[in-house]
Amino acid sequence: MPNREFYEVDVPIHDTANPALRGLHVFTGEADSPTTAMRRAHEVYDAALAAQQAGLEVPGRQPDSWGAAGLRPGWEMEWTAAKAGPWKSPYSWTTRSDFAL
Figure 1 (tube, rainbow, N blue to C red):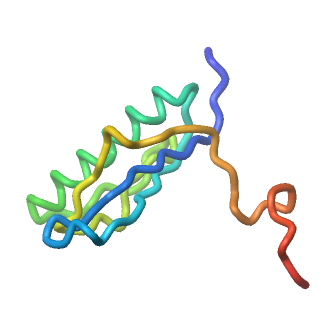
Figure 2 (cartoon, rainbow, N blue to C red):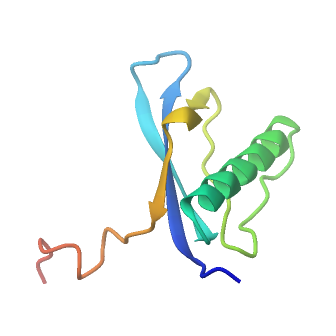
């Protein structure tokens, strides 16, 4: 079985009513490669969007930690510009040196 680690998928988004409003939707979860991470992020997004459009509760986090929360109606995902890679905590002591205690 391939080694699984925690991945992050960053998907640029924009407001369809005002394309100048832009953002980033971040998905995280376990995967064995960036390709698998991208696939899982898209799957949980599709499931969440379908539930939201049907007036149902958005599915929660899956056993492999993937989930889609905070969907914004009227915002479009730019999947062709999405990037996937190992997740790095922005609060990690090994990656940040600007914390003051």
